[in-house]
Every structure is written in structure tokens, then in C-alpha cells.
Length: 249
Image (cartoon, rainbow, N blue to C red; front, side, top):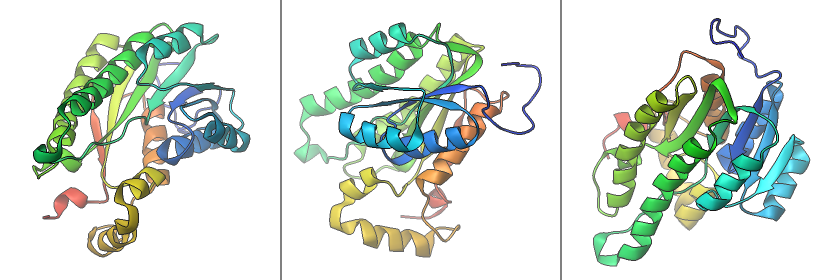
């Protein structure tokens, strides 16, 4: 993979991408788009049954079942990976919403620490497996940029991940490190978090967002593939929210 010339076709031919969280949502759609762009995929997820179903569709180079929050298992995965890869994207990890009065401090501390440890673990243990000018790409969010009741933990992570990304980009160079900060994305995770309120949220966003539609996994995956292909991008956070941040709450 050359770092001297941009890829005019923005494709991933002869490249391999590790997708962590590949069994559904943004991860699965990223795996699909990598394959469509000519790349090979290593699909990683926690649930073996869901991973098997997703792999039957995508036909990856290989699969691995692991919880990315388990840093020992993460280290083992990268150390045993029998080939070099060009890119690693992690969509693992979800938000935690809880007002202070209802907060379990031990659970909250564990969630916050696991998310940071997972990001650092991927950065640390993928060294020696990711080729120069390849990419580490993480998925974060934009929702915590405005304060709100129950948003303390999400806001802290929203602020921490861009700074962590920028520092890792310097330390791991010439490997590139970037962050996608997504607003509401219509995924199974979003549906599970909102429950019976998800349809109302979709309608609200369709009516209010400047793009007049809800952001989906295909939108985020397309941005991820572009960041992988564009070798001038590193240390940055890329928002994708359909203009949600332009609106007042």
C-alpha cells in the first residue's frame, strides 16, 4: 500500500479489513461495502450465531468470536492473526444513559473504563499487524456534546474519544487513526435502546433534519470506506448526523 499517491478509484482491492462488531448494524454494513469495493474482511463479533449468519452473507476471509472489551482476548486475537491487514474498524460498544439518581457507580465506572480500554487495546495490540498508511477507525457519537440529564457518561466519552484519537495518530504514525462521530443511526442497537419510541424518533428526525431522512448504516459505512481509502486523513473526527447538531433541542 503506497503512501505517495491517492487512490483515484477509492477502492479496497487486495486489502484486508478487520471489522469488530461485524454481525449487525454499522459493522455488518461496513463489511458489505468493503467486499463490494474489492476488499477482504475479517469479521469479529461477540455472538457466534449472529456472526455465522452475517458471515454466510458476506463470505469473509475469516471470522473470530470475541468480546472486544476483553482485552486479554483482544491481544490473543491480534497476536494469532496469521496475516497482515490494512485497516481495523471497531463499531463495538454502546452508550450508557443514566441520571445520577439512578446511576450504579460501579457499573458506570466499568462501562467507561471498558470503552477506553477497548480503544487502547485495539491500538496497542494491532501494532505489527496493520500495514503502514493503514487505518484504525473507531465509532463514537455526537449526542453528548450538549449537556443533559442522564448524559454525563456519554458526554464524557464523547469528549474523550477525539482527544484519544488525535494522540494515537501521532504515536502510531504512519498508521492512520480516525474517529467517526455519529448522531442517531437507524440500527438494531438504536431500536433496542428506544424500544416502542423508535418509530416516533424516526418520524421526528425525518421532519426536522436538514437532509429530511434518517441516517442509516449505509451512510456511516460509506464514510468509513472513504476514510480507509484516503491516505491524507489522520487524527481527525468526522461527524455524520444529517445536520442534527444544527438543531436546537
